[in-house]
Image (tube, rainbow, N blue to C red; front, side, top):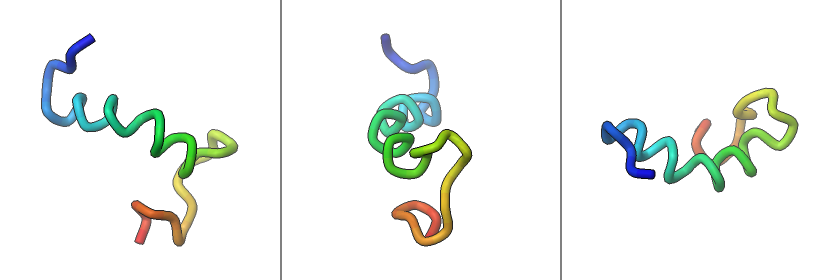
Amino acid sequence: MMATTATEGWAVAHRGSMVAEEYPDGMGPRPGTCCSR
């Protein structure tokens, strides 16, 4: 499935890796993580 917008494309592309690292418990990004700096 192709994303409709660039924002959606980014989210879909990073969903697998970012969610796995920043959302280990499904609560949200933690302080000190890759994208929260």
